[in-house]
Image: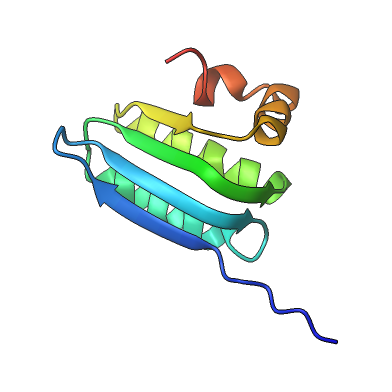
Length: 109
């Protein structure tokens, strides 16, 4: 029996207020992090009012995924753009706390 893994979907939406929302569905792992890094850097590079990463439908994240989020934060910060992770599930929030990235990426925005 072969298992088919659905690809991670990454959608970018522009809000009427100038924000860019990056919506992720599926797993953030070594197979999808290069694409996620690229999307987050490009989003920050156009200097929106904010980059918001919606993680409501993320089912898994590994250390490479956490690294991609940190890279996105750094790219946004370099352009003076606010960056925020929203709607992350408890297991993702726990990982962000353990890595010390919670305050920078989630905080109490």
